[in-house]
Length: 416
Ligand code: EPZ
Image (cartoon, rainbow, N blue to C red; front, side):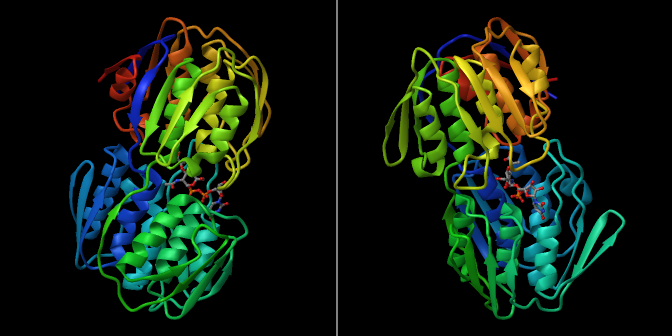
């Protein structure tokens, strides 16, 4: 596992170009399993989750060539049993279930293991497949699902799960008849997947709203596609400018995808210039405290909650953050406290008392976004902070140290 050594208290400045969205591209790669032919994806980030998904697809019989930011996928025949160790390494691998069940009529998927951010059950995915006619058995560490041909169904989700919306939407493209998903997740990545599948020949309407309708077709082809910008990467760099009192520009960003964050940082005193595909930020001399609760899109994203807690340590006053999506997403706060942060933890909320002069220490990243929060805090801290476990950060941020370095930070990666 590598480490970052960060010398803090330097204001960041300059321009950063946002990469393609991790949480879209992983599902686009999986959606290709429904099709036939050669796909070309543009704006694909060089992150380790993408490499893991390449491993999954190759094991299923897909040919993959990847030189960031371009990926080519050649799909002809595929097989229906996924490599256990890769599924355990990355929960997003569970998304192969819908496409393979629809295409092959059977699939065996290893049960994804525990997770640092909460329980993450799969009941909404599995119940959706069952309503479409699948039988699902749990055999030891593996789910075995069978359905000679899935049929359409009117499915109401008890919660707008992102992964379940995508899984059922993909499965329904090849099912017999019409599927309606009610209380569907509305994230921009779901719209991206709808657009991709429709370009392959699917008939989907409604992504981005709570009701998605899919008319099943007999087969799907291939397409070329450009992945949307990563709104969480964009938010993380915006907050890197803010926590260091810097000013800079995010390029290749869709401002409406980070609307709640932009409102919040303006409320904290930042000045923003918002253009069609760019956001410029000027930090205030003094950050105001804030309150937020995470929520499914269009609410405030849970994937930016840890980074906001890091920023709250520099705000003048008491900030309160409620986590309403995952049940265990404050683990990283124990590491922030090692820098001197004053954080009171309740079960699903934290109160942060700022401002604090954070002081360098050695920290351990335990998950992707918690790791990003540690990096932000280290950028604001006095002295030289070591962050271990940066492989978690590499799952979702391309070359974070190089990009921060270009913005004026002092960050060194030590491989070990
Ligand atoms: C996606 O996870 C993202 N991952 C997550 O990104 C993100 O935090 C999350 O959506 C919410 O926005 C990918 O896209 C690869 P959910 P997903 O199903 O699909 C509960 C990151 O850092 N639930 O919407 O797994 C679940 O336990 C990450 O990039 C059930 O109860 O999220 C959770 O509390 C991590 N039963 C809530 O719903 C189910 O069957 C939201 O989960 C499914 C989910």
